[in-house]
Structures are given as structure tokens and as C-alpha cells.
Length: 289
Ligand code: HBI
Ligand code: FE
Image 1 (cartoon, rainbow, N blue to C red):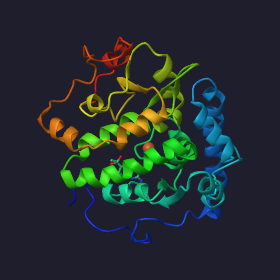
Image 2 (cartoon, helix red, strand yellow):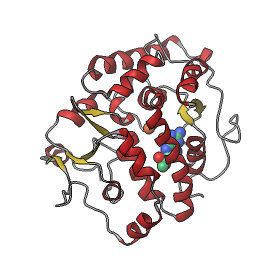
Image 3 (cartoon, rainbow, N blue to C red):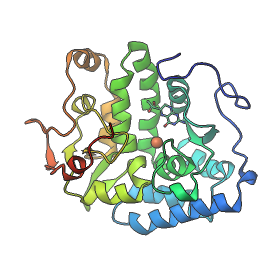
Image 4 (cartoon, rainbow, N blue to C red):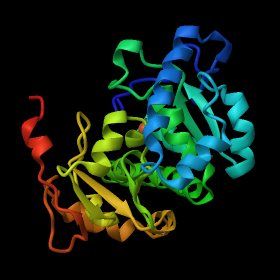
């Protein structure tokens, strides 16, 4: 059993790199309708909430088409813009496989879409989370470089046994990151932008902390997988995010190996505090035991 719980090779029908054909012609009208419902809900609330590179990417890839996008179609423009491609996978893939795809500018996306009765939450990332949430930012050249660097860093982190710390960087940026802009704080994280409730909560609710991005501090901070985040980190720019990832992580990992985690709701004297949250939401919803 490998560290991420995968025991053997790709499932039947998948290639050695765990990719499968998207089989776009096989989606039913009901599945396309789920995409349209989710898309229209998010599109109605993302003006003034999603960052400009995200909105620009949504337009560039023409994702507002009626229904589940055909990867073969969106990859033409995505490739032209940043050299990235979306590849279909059966679901979560082993970390090493995931990082290798990112390191080669391939974003693994689930081909399945959630059921009409699970629009608001699902265990595993589906095609709406992966393609609506993650792919528009891959049209931004700086973020496209960041995601490739993250993939390379993931492979290195695995060799050093530091994956848990690095996974927090992915979680607090790629999934739940916020961006400082002249118009205010905006969303770039896929987990937020693909969720109606969290798109509102992450920016407007007084409950969570919002802190300035600090790579090493963030890598010492646990995260929630079962509910809204209790802390969000705000990057000054996507370039700052990329620059932070281009540095040598070896000394950082050495310090992290001796450091203790920071309690999830804590605010440190060294933190740049944008919101000192009430944590009222988290207190009212204790972690499911
Ligand atoms: N596989 N398909 C898929 N999508 C992910 O987001 C993903 C994955 N495997 C591993 C993984 N994410 C995380 O463990 C990494 O972020 C560390
Ligand atoms: Fe994701």
C-alpha cells in the first residue's frame, strides 16, 4: 500500500498514466443539465468575487457553452495560451501520478459529474470542480507556471517525505487561495470558486481568519477537508505565489521537520491580519467525530 492508499496500478480500462478517454459523446442530457445548472449558479455570483484571470479564462475557453465541455475542444485554446492540457482520469490518482501530470502541464480531471441531488457537496472532485474550478486559471501564464512548479515540487517532496507539508501549500493556494487586487480580495482557489456557498463565505463571512500569504507559516497550518476553511491566505499577486515556489525548499523542509503545527484558528504576532475572524461558523459546527 503506498502512502496515499493506492495499492496497485491503474484501474481496468485506464492507461499506464491513469488517463482514460473522456468519451464526451457518452454524456447524457441529464448530465449536461447538471453542468448547466452548476455553471449558471456560479456565473451569477462570480462577478466581483472571482479574480480577473479566472473570469478571463472562463471566457477564453468558452466554458459557458451549454453543457459539459469536450476536453478535445477546450485543449486547443488552452494549449495555445499556456501549453496546458486537460486529461480525463477515473477519479483521484496516486500522488506520484498526479504530480507527474502537473509537472508536464497536464491537468487530471475526473470525467464523472455529480448527481442532481448532490449539487452542493461531494466527496471526490468531479468534472465541475476540476474543469470549472481549476482549468480557467491555467490560462494565466503565471499561474500556469506555478502549477507546473508545484508538480515538480511534489515529486521532490515525496522523495524527502515532506508531502504532508507540501499538500498544505496546494490546499491553501490552488484549492482555497485568495488574491489581493486593487478592487479588494478576490477568489482564485478552485475549491471556493466551484462552490456557491463557499464563494460567499470565503470573502464575506466574519468567521474565518484571512491572513497574508506566508509560505512556511501556511505549511505548518492544518486544513479542513470536511467543511469551510477556518483560515484563508491572501497572496499579493500571482507572481508572488510563483516566486515563493521557485525558491529552494530544502532549508524550509529542514525547519518544518522540527516545527510544530500551528493551531488552525490561531493568529501569530508575525501574521499580516486582513480579518481576525470570529470562528463562529466553526464553533457552531464541531468536527464530525
Ligand atoms: N488526483 N485526480 C486527482 N485530483 C487531485 O486533485 C488529486 C489527485 N491525487 C492526489 C491529490 N490531488 C493530492 O494528494 C495532492 O494535492 C497532494
Ligand atoms: Fe481540486
